Image 1 (cartoon, rainbow, N blue to C red):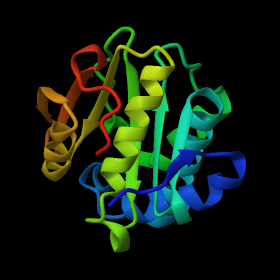
Image 2: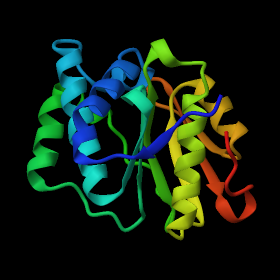
Image 3: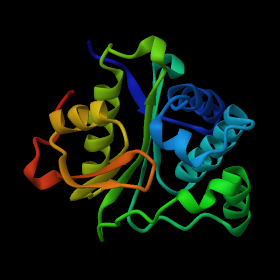
Length: 193
């Protein structure tokens, strides 16, 4: 199935945030780093902050009907504002210490998030978003894309698109996190998911 994906605009922000909130409702990492009280509200707030930052400093993609969304940041993306960081800290509450610094690869673009509504999973939307993101990053001069995931099913999905596991980290009591990397020069650029 070929899914229609496109660059997002500010008008796409609210429905994309809702999609990512639903997609990440039971995601192991978000369940680990976001407190249970007001979990959905906190998750929605964090998705909004992160997606707004990506829309301003990177690239956001959506599928037709906003059933899926993804965000990429270039290596030179601005840091979040002080106000945004304060909001992120507040939303994570007492679990803020569970966040870890990402293992950054100098010069690599980062696939910050990718989510598909559960009601639309299994239809190729995730693959379409990945393929679109890789083509777009390549057109923008990216030579390398990295990501992190804490779901083993996602590891297999990303491997099908050429990503390789660079490391697996177990965070004391939390879910495993796989760091993955793809050198675009070595991949089949323009692959169609």
